[in-house]
Length: 132
Image (cartoon, rainbow, N blue to C red; front, top):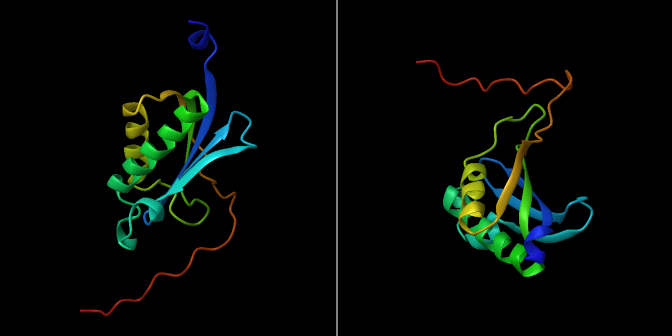
């Protein structure tokens, strides 16, 4: 009962783009990295690194390492490319959060920390396609 009264809390950073998903487990301050995993570690085909299946496998590895360290409660921070790039996270973000809860990790909060520009640099011009 004493272990449940004072649970160890961690921080899970999810960087989900359209091509890859990277997860990082840190302590509550964010200074010490406890575990990290990406789509390239679990899936060998490059075009499937950002898929929900890859994100699910990444979350299973992170959850196992979290339990190993004694962490059972986490705060989640989701991030996309941001800036002048796409501001919405890739399809792996939602799948990895769902997989974390299925693997017995309790989520206290989910926060979007995608960087937003304050009228920064100019976007690339659109590609001119062939007129039909």
